Amino acid sequence: MSFIEIIQNGVEAEEETILAAQRGSLAALAFEGAEGEICIELTNDAVIHSINRDFRGVDRPTDVLSFPTCEGEELIAAPDGHLGDIMISLDTAARQAAELGHSLAREVMFLAIHGTLHILGYDHMKPDDEAVMFEKQRQILKKTENEAILGEEQL
Image 1 (tube, rainbow, N blue to C red):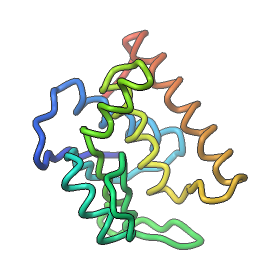
Image 2: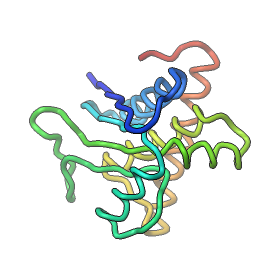
Image 3: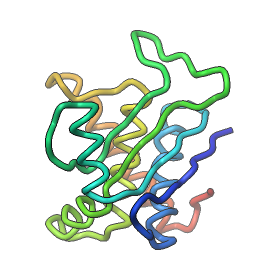
C-alpha cells in the first residue's frame, strides 16, 4: 500500500491542489507497480531556491525537486517503506500553469508525477532517458485525468 504525505512550508494550498499532488504521485507509483511512502512538500520560490542552490548548485528557484531515499543501479526501498521526498514550488507551478493555460491543480499533479518518477529512478539528462521518462509522464497524466473525469479516482 502507498501513502503520500503532504506538508506545507510557507504556503497555504487549496484542497484541490493538495489532492492533485497526492493523486499524481499515487498514479505514478501505481503505473510503475511500486508501493511505498512519499512526502511532498508544497512550498514557495524562496524555500525551493535555497534548497536548489545548496543541494544542486543552481542559484534559482525551480518547479520540483526530488530526493530519493535510495539511489543506484537497482532501486531498493528503505526498510520503513519511505521512497523519498519531493518539493514543489507553488509559485513556479502557478506561473507555469498560467503560461500553459491550465489549472494550478493540473500543474501540481504533473509535477508530482515527474517527481515520483525521479524517485523511482527515472531521469532526463540523456535524450533516450528523457524520451522514456516524458512518455511515461504523458501516459500517467492522461490516465489520471481520464479517471478524474469519469469519477474513478481513489485516494
